[in-house]
Image 1: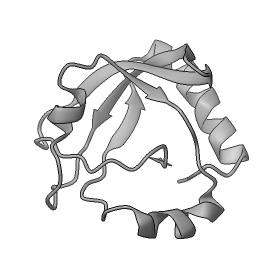
Image 2: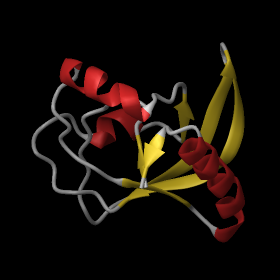
Image 3: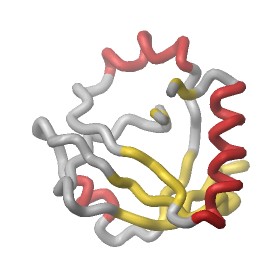
Length: 114
């Protein structure tokens, strides 16, 4: 599953992963907790800033905006090349339900592509 939340050039050693809480912004500074997630299965990095610099002292990720798939062709040229891909997955079985609801919503609204 691919999420286009925001484009960050990320890097992390392939044998490591990051885990933390996933929040969804609901308005301004307010956010609701969705579930615990893990970023794993990193592709080899092709340059760019290390993921450690972004998540080193962070214990959560906040999703601020989802872009429509149709808009990606217009948005992508204004960013740097994507240096790396990774999977965002629920940490445990108990997190799977909330993660699955978010995933279905994103597919239905055409925000992600499998």
